[in-house]
Length: 393
Ligand code: PLP
Image (spheres, rainbow, N blue to C red):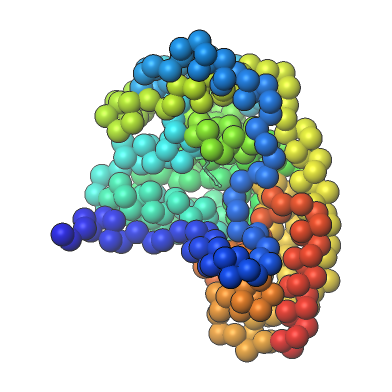
């Protein structure tokens, strides 16, 4: 049987491809360092686990409303007010199976065939694929390295056509770790308002910032911008809860209602037990990211400084998330590789360090290294990369 064209055109996840290769080497007994992962290496806090266990014992194991538990929506509304200065009613929030599913559902309800979504590159690998799955067309706008990989209002204006439906903003960014300032967000948002382009603001890394920069939700800049924005977030990165699969979207009630209708047929509801766990996470004053941030920052400083010493590797220091995104073109060229992908493959084979080539993120000269692993492992990885580069040149 022939598969549907929409899945035939899917690009396999570059993150998963390198992980698969690393797994094969591991099975052969090689001491592989995996820097490909996109999840905090910390355990979910005990009080959240306890809440889930209680939910099971209390029989909270039935269907919930398709758009999620009202208590959880209220807790999220409180979080949005407290952290982001945003006021939403429960009819403006939908709980989803992770932020990924919020984005997926949103594209399903806003895109018609050939509608365009502007995706600043480098980008998170799932954005273009999700747009394609909704029969839309991803339109990439290159954020230049000298502008911290961020796009400008002029670039945005140029990319807009009469088919443009939405712009994605991801700050702090995966893979670059860069952030947009309030003034930059305002200018981009004004261009969107002028052309009636919806803003999709993916704020999943808002709690993982290591500088004095403050996370600003673009929706908080004005009520007009808020009306034209859908905020995406969740507990995966903020509470080390990647496997629980709870995220949310907050935005105009009409859009949220359409997403809820879609979800009612697609998934019925997010896992009830995980929703009670997320409720505990949002209701608590405990902020697990305080400790995580300290540890991530220490790792970032160490790893960044070690990589900076390696010839041919140039890295902008990220402000948030948990990835380094260096440009390694010079190192690759000096060693005779035509592409950075080949360089990364050789690094995996020769020194058993698995990182993700930037080609999958729309940045073929860069690689992504996750520092969601221990400092010892990061030091070992940096030494191996250094040895690899020195050996080659
Ligand atoms: N958005 C970005 C930029 C991400 O990096 C990720 C996960 O890696 C997600 C969304 C999805 O997060 P979730 O686990 O909530 O689906």
